[in-house]
Image (cartoon, rainbow, N blue to C red):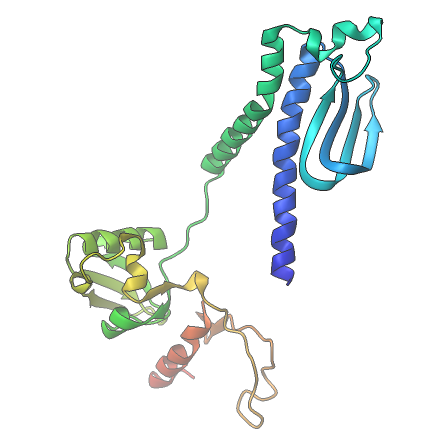
Length: 270
């Protein structure tokens, strides 16, 4: 329920931003063209908040956040005093009226360009190619949760996006992929992923998934659900604890825990 309400909230916020920029485009150009603006409203219905500026424009936030409008002085809608006819929308030139009407969509276009530019400049964080789950083909090849892919077919891999692209390329070429990984104990292994055996007509967009690989980002965190009474963990761990590392080795997902404990036990590190 909280996720749903959160989605609704952000939808309303996003819509409010788009509407505000759109209507501000109309408002700004109308004022530049000498048109008197009576109301600038974000939302429809009864105003929840309003304020009037020195030019007589009422700025309002209304109860129904599904749009907005800019109301301009217009002789076709109300009787306009002779002294204000020059600032009525209908008395402006055709080109001025076209500019006012087009300013809303133009403002939204400029907003999109600005956001895309910001995304390009700021960039985005990419994630290491750490496996959260290995099933099917990948498990049969020896790949395990917690393995970090560092090389595919002789090409260094640093991120999940790079690993996904390299695997997709190999699959499209109908070739097996030699995948070099570091396990959670920093031991290097080379596994052969038989991508050439994928069925004809496979979906090129989801090659890692079809190969049985899942990125650790999508998996559940290693959170304690319960502690067995009388066990070694009793009194040390409790329900809700989040496992971040075991014996100094970082834990990325719940799927890693069993395999990591087993490996540590085998080397006598527990």
